[in-house]
Image (tube, rainbow, N blue to C red; front, top):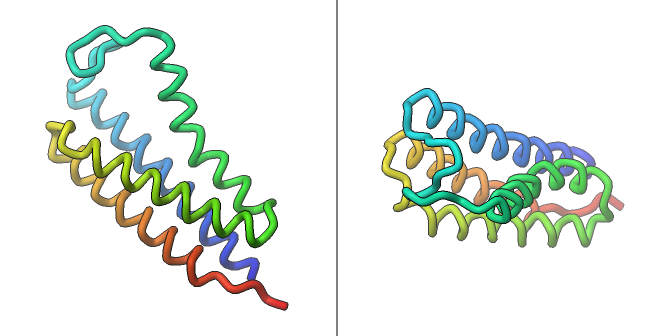
Length: 124
């Protein structure tokens, strides 16, 4: 069903926007120091890892629209579960209530993504 592809892609777009909103609010709230994470200077290699991690939801928008059903369904489930676990693990590390709220919302989007991918049945 093509609607499932569009819904799943929309969920990945929404997730990426939640992450970006958190970053923007963090900057405006003054909870951000350039080049520093958890009070320590971050090496450039870590920024590559962060960029790759944040590129994944963007790639999922495209891949969800073009991959075959079986690969698409499994990939959506696996990636959403990985992001769910990653964000759940990182949740206590965010001091701001807005960060925790946005991460909680992102967890809900991950659950919805898994649910839609799980119940996806191709139209014959």
